[in-house]
Amino acid sequence: MMARRLSWLGQRQQVLANNVANADTPGYRARDLKALSFKKMLGGGGAKLGMAATNAGHLTGQSRKPAPGVVEKVDSHEIVISGNSVSLEEEMMKVGKTLMDYQLTINLYSKHIKMIKTALGRGN
View 1 (cartoon, rainbow, N blue to C red):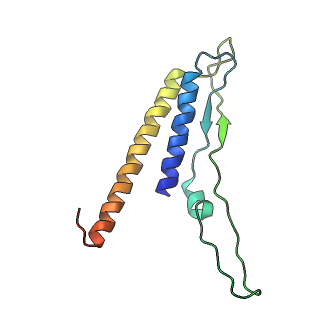
View 2: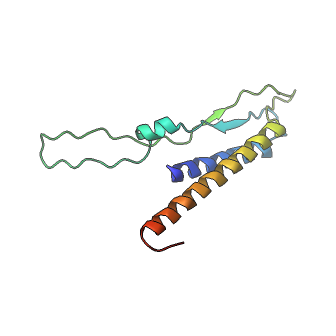
View 3: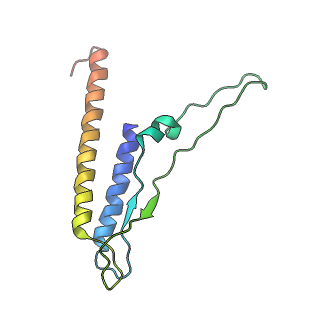
């Protein structure tokens, strides 16, 4: 789940950078990724092992595909005469939050790896 979260944060950073780059493009609408739902990730939105059937009468289970990062248009309150809806202040706040979320996830991942190494007796 941490790898999926890091991937989503990387994709979001690209979308936000694209918004900032097009801040002066006439008619450009700001975009953002749909937020990842922790509940959906636990409910099977991530990778899942398939069941092996050794007999034709066995149940096969359900296969689930991970949802790709879908880009959606964001409704902004600021639309200038040229039709551009990018607010640099909003985009910079989103970039800052994405950076903090990325650092938090990296720290959690690092702590997880250290815990595994300690459990294996390899120390820090």
